[in-house]
Length: 311
Figure 1 (cartoon, one colour):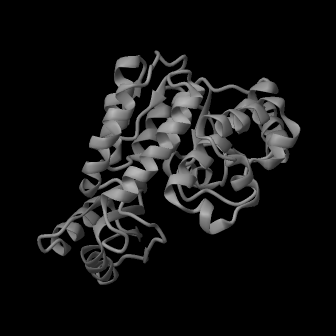
Figure 2: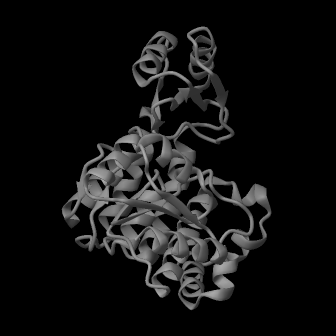
Figure 3: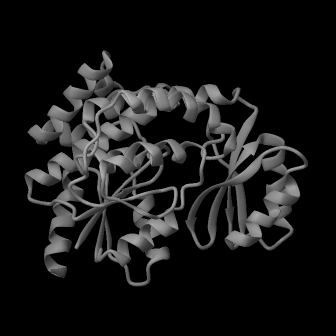
C-alpha cells in the first residue's frame, strides 16, 4: 500500500517543478491554474526566483503546494496514485488537495493568505525556531519549561525520536538551545525562518485563517489523510477545516503521522514534491520502511522502478 508524503516550507528551491512543467500536461495545468488563481506568475517565481523572493513565506507556501500537486499529477499520469497521504505542516494542504478534500485553486489562495497571516502574527526578529538534536521529546519539553522565564518556547515539530524543533520568543529559544548543549544534545541550531511557526504565538494567524477557510467548500477525502495535530485520520469533510485551524498554532507530530500511516497499512512511502527531507525521516521513524522521493521526472522513473521491483 502506497502512502504519499508532501513536504512543507523549507523544502523550496529555485527551479522546483520546472522539469515536470515541461514534460507533463497535468503538471503544467496545475501551475497554470495557480497563476490564474493568484493573479501573478507563480510558475516563473518557482522556476527562476530570485531565491530571496521565493523564500518569503507568502510566496513559499503556494509555490511548494503547487510544485507538490503538480508532481502528484505527473505521478497520476504514470498510474502512480496513493492509498493514503500525509503532509508536513503546509504539506497537509497538498495531501488534502490530492485526496480531493480541497479544490486546488482554493488551497493555493488559502496557503498564500496563511503565509501572510503567520508572518504578520509575530514581528520579524521577535520569534525564532531551533532544531534540538540528540535529545528525546520529554527532555526537550523540560528544557522549554526551564528556559521560558515567562516567555513562550514550545515544541513545534516532532520529526523523529532524536530531532525536535522548538519555537517561541527568540530569547527563550536561545536559552533553550544553550541548555540543550549542557544536557547531552548532539547539536542544536537556530533555523533560518522568518517567524516562530506551530507555537501559541501563531494563535492570531489561526483566527484570521478561520474566516478564509469558512468560505471554502470541502469534500470527503477519497483516501485517508493523516493529520499533523494528533496523528488521527481525516476521512470526512467535517474534519478538514477544524484540524487545519488547530494545526497553525500546534506542534506538527510527524513521528505520529508516519507511524499511523504504517499502522493503516502503508508499506511504501513516496515523498512527492521538492526535497527529500521526509524520505530521510521515514527511515528513522519506522524500522525497515521503504522510502523514495519524487521531485522531477528522473525521480519518478526511479521510484516507479523501485516500487515495481518491490511489488
